[in-house]
Every structure is written in C-alpha cells, then in structure tokens.
Image (tube, rainbow, N blue to C red; front, side, top):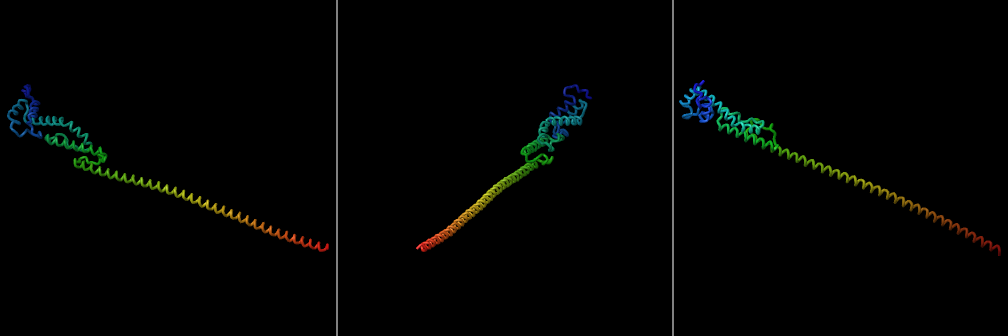
Length: 249
C-alpha cells in the first residue's frame, strides 16, 4: 500500500486514468505506446509512490480502457444485434482490437443488418435462407435469388391462374355448346314430331277424302242402279199400258 496515496493524483486509479487520457497505451492496449513519454522515469516514480509498478498500471489501464470502449460501443452493438437477428455479428467485444477495427466491425454489422432487414421486408426470403456467418455480398445475393424465385413463383402462379381461367372459360363454352346442342336436339325432335303429326294429319285427311270419294262413288252407283231400275219399271209400265190399249180396241 502506498504511503503517498493521500496526495492528489498519486493513487493507482488516478495514474491509470491519466495514462488512458494521455493516450499512453498502444492502439491494441497491449502495452504502452512506442513513443517518448508514453512511460518514463517519472511514471516509474509515480507508480512507486502509489505502491505499484509499470506492469500493474498497464494491466489495470488495459482493463479500464476496454471497459470504456465497451461502454462506448454498447449502444451501437445493441442496435446492430437487433438488425442482424440470427446473423453472427463481426463485433464480438473490444478484445485487443484497435478503435479503427472496432469501427469497421460495427459498420459492417450495420450494413449487413440493414441489408437483411430490407430483403426480409420484401418477403422474398426468410431468415433461415441465410447462413449465420453470411457476408454482406452473400446477403445481397440471397436477396436477388429470393427475388428471382418469388418472381418465378409469381409467374407460375399467374400462369396457373390464367390456365384456370382458360379452363373455366372452356368449360363454360362447352356447357353453352352442350345446352345449345340440347336445345337444337329438342327443336329437331319437336320438328320431327310436328312433321310426323303433319304426315299423320295429312294421311288422315287423305283417308277421309278417299272414304268420302268412295261413299260418293258408291252413292252414284246406287243412284245409277236406281235410275236404271226406275227406267225399267217405267218401260215395263209403258209396255203394259200399250198392251192394255190393244186389248181394248
């Protein structure tokens, strides 16, 4: 324990924060920066006064710097996680990454997440169609393929719908033709029936006329026979009259 820890800025936490604020750590926080003044004899003396040493200050500074970076990037990482869904984010914590690398990872996750949400909103694919470790290019490619598949499915569905319409129209036309044929058949049947009835009526009329003619001829014959009979009787009576006159003379 430091006997000088009561002095302002002489405690371990103050030294650690000072090293961080002065950017005395290297970009990966694995050691002190390779520049003059990053750690010098004055820092060794300050560490001695605080009851510690360079290695311990480095260890604590790395922990504190990583905590600060984690807190700084947590909001962006949370937003990206919501966009990425099932995808594995490139950002896996600060680790020993440089700030530039961390920014690149978060930017990449944001791009992938936005691309994923865009193609999912189009309804062409589902999350399961994309690998958890898919790159941005793979996500975009999956979206294009999904769009093509959807378009192909829509075309097939439209063709099927059109075929259904054609089949329905064909069935309707066949039904109309069938009903028309039935009407024509009934009309032909009525025509045949009417023709048969007309022939029957004509035959009956001819038969009646023939019977009438036969009756007229028969009556004529009977009249002629009666006339001849009457004439014979008149001739006979005339002869008898002449005979009676002869006797009278």
